[in-house]
Length: 126
Image 1 (tube, rainbow, N blue to C red):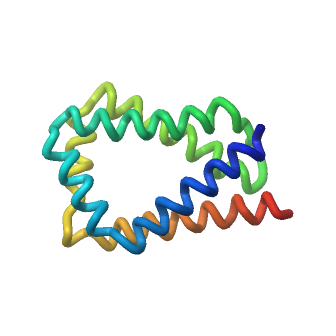
Image 2 (image 1 turned 90 degrees about the vertical axis):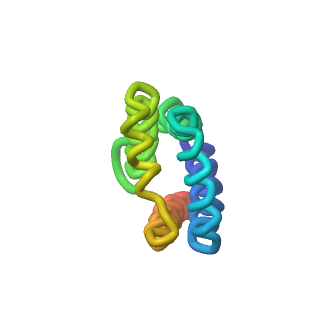
């Protein structure tokens, strides 16, 4: 099951990472739309984070080697969801940080997603 979750993560992180790099302004527009929904928009982010993170936490309990990165990412997403669900005002402050002027940070996140994906792919191929 751990291999399947790693493939799941490679696919998701690669697609979203490439999208962040190629279309950062589309992501800015998406986050601005969510911000416009107020705390309800934060709940959308929380549900996505919980969905991705809980699948990893449930099926990927690896605490050594390269795959530990994925386990930690899963727990970080679950923690993010918990914070956003219980303190949506905090999540709204985070959404307010996204702007056209800061779109380069979304590119940086895209690169980070691709690096994690590449590490996991390397581990899967080894």
